[in-house]
Length: 355
Image 1 (cartoon, one colour):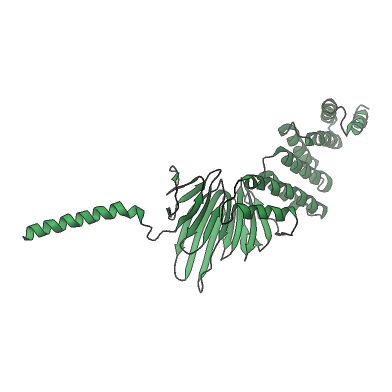
Image 2: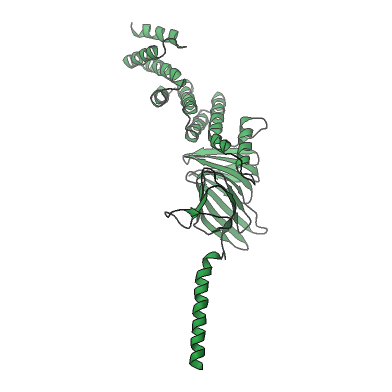
C-alpha cells in the first residue's frame, strides 16, 4: 500500500509539474506591463535580435521585451506602476529596464524610432527615476506627461504637464515644461525650450501629435507622416529668426535639425540655403557657405532652390578669388536658367571676370 501511495503521489506531483510548465507562459506574474489596447499591426519580441511575433490585447511584457507598430499600428502599453506609453504608427521601443519597489521605481524605455506619449505616474513618498531614450537623446522623468518623436538622428519633445530634463549625449540638459518644445539632433545638447503659443504652426504640430497619440487611434495616419516635415519647416523659419537675432550657432543647429527631420528635397534645400546665408553673411566663412550651395546643386537637381544655389555658388567663388571656377558656375547658370531672376547679375559678373 505504501508503495502504491508513493507511486500515486509521484504521479500526481509529475502531473502538477507538467501543468505548471504548460500554464506558466500564460500567467503574467510580476510582469512589467501589458499591451492594454491596440489596433492595426502590433508585434513584440522577448529579447533582441529575434523575430517579432503578433501581439494581442493583454500580451504580457517583461524587462527586455520589444514592441513595434506598423504603418497602421497603434498601441497602449500599461506598466504595472500605472504609467502608460501610447505608441503611434511606425514606432519601435524596448523596455530596457524596469524595477518597481515600495520606495523607489526606475525604468529605462528605449525608442529606436517613432512617436509616443508617455504618462509617468508619481510614487507618493517615494522616488521616481524614469528615462525615456532614443539613440541620440534622453529624457529624465520624475512623474509627468510628455510626447516624444525620434526621427532619424533628430528628436522632438512636447511638454504636456510637469517638467522633463532633456539631454543629448552630454551633461547639458534643458527643461521641458508644459506647452513647450525642446529638440536636438546627433546627440548634441538640445536647443533652448520654445513656448508653444496658440494659433501658430508649432501649436498645430502639437495638436497633430496629440491626435496620433490620443486614447483612440486616428482614422488615418496622414498627420503622423506629415509631422516631421511640418516641424522641419517651422525650424527653418525659427532659425531665420535666430540668425536675425544674432544667435548664429543656434540658427545653424536648428537648420541642421530641420535637415535631419525631413527627407523632402524642397525643405532640405531651404535649410541648406539658410545655412549658407548664415556662413556667408554673418560668420564670414565662404568655404562653409559654398559647401552648402554645392550640396543643393548636386543632390536636388529638380528643386527651384537650385537656381539660387547655383547663383550663390558662382558669386561666392568669385569673392574667394577662384575666377575659373566662378566662371564655370555662372556659365552653368546661364545655360540652365536663360531667363532666370539673376540673369542680369550673372552677366555683370561674367563681364568682370573676363577683364
